[in-house]
Length: 490
Image 1: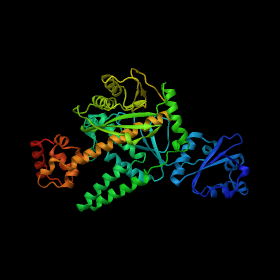
Image 2: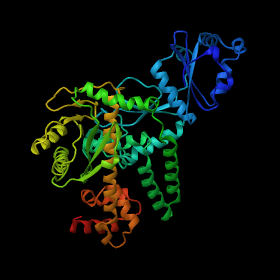
Image 3: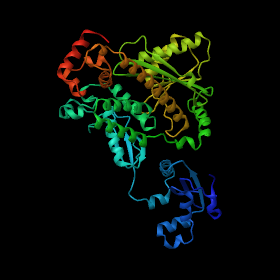
Image 4: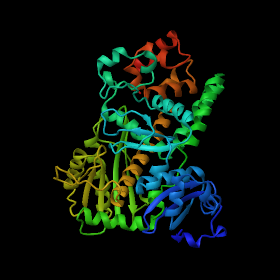
C-alpha cells in the first residue's frame, strides 16, 4: 500500500486484515514497525486523540513523531510476524529499539561453514555467517521437532567443533544410535553435508518428501501394533506441518517482478557477461552412502524455473563416490546430445560445487569442443562464485538479486537430484535380495533398508548393530540375514 499522511487517516480506509504497519517521521524515515491481527483496530488505537493522555512517555513521543504511514496486508498472523521481523532488521527503527521488551521468539541456527554443522536454537540473530530460520512462536514444539530431525538426519549433537575418536569413546550408545558418527569416520564430510542440505529444504517449507516417509513409518508401527510409536510419529508429522509450512518469501514477493528482471541484469554486470543470461542450466550430483549415484540438471528461463527441460541422470561410467568424475560425465552427456541434435545451448552454465567440480565440467566441454558458453561454479560453504582459471572467486552481495537467483538454481537442482535419488532408493526397497529370506516381510525389509541404506552397507555392519537398530530382530534372525547376504550380491 502506498505511503499516506497521518492527517489523511480514515478508519474506513484501513483493511481489517492481518498485516504490518510502518510509521515514518516528517523526513520519511522509518521510526517504528509493528504487526497486527487487524490493521484497522490497531491503527485506530494509535490515532485516537485520547491515547496521548494515557500513553507512557515513549509511546507519546512515538505518536507525536508519526507523519506518514504505510500498510502491508498478509494472509496470516505468522506471515505478519515474518514480515515485521524482516522490516525491523532492514530499517532498525528508533522506537522499536526503545520500546521492545525482552520477549523474542526462537530462531533455528546452523553454521554451514562448519566441518560438521549441527542445529541450535537462539533468540538473537547475529551477523556471524550462520544461517537462521524463523522466528517460531511455538518454543516447546520447535525443541521437540528439532530433536527429532537431528536424529532423523543422523546429525551430531555434541559440542566439539570437530569431534574425534576421543569424543566417540565418551558418547552414549543411545546417542550414537541416531548419529552418523563423524567422530570415528563412520561417514565422510561430503555425506554429512548432503544430509544437512536435505534437512535445510525442510526449513524452507519443502516438507512433502519427509511427510510421505514418516507417514509410511507411522503405518508400519500401527500395523505391527506399536500404537504408541505410531502416535509419536503422527505428532511429529503435525509439528513439521505447522512449523515449516511454506511461507511467502517477502524479500522476493514484495518486489517480485522487479527482482526477476534485475537479477539477470545484475548477473550480466557483476559477472561481466557479453549477453543477458536468459537461459541458465545448473547441475548437481546426489549420492548418499555410495548408493544410487545420480545427478540432475535444471533450467531457468528469464529468471524462472522451466521444468519442461529438467533432466535426471544415472551415473554410468563412475564407480564409487567421485563427484568430480560424475560431474564430468553428466556435463559431457548433456551437451554432446544438444550438439548432436542441433538444439539451442544455454547462455550460462552453473555447477553446484567449487573449483574441483567446475574444473571437471570444463574438461567435459573441452572434450566435445564446446566453447563460448559462460560457466561458473557456486561453492556451497561460503557462496563463492568461481569462473574457470580463477583462484580467488567472486563474492556477490548476500542480499543481491543476482546471488539469490543462483542460490535458487542450486537449491532447485539439489531438490530435483534428491527426489530422483529417493525414487530409486524406494524402487530398490521394493525389489531386494532380502525378499528371499524366510521370515522377512515387506515391512521389515523396508525398515532395514531405510535404516542402513542398502544391502551393501548392511554387509559392513555387525549382527549386534542390526539387532540394536531394528526393533524385533533377534540373534537368530540376524544370523540368518548375514548368512544370506554374505552369499549373494545385491
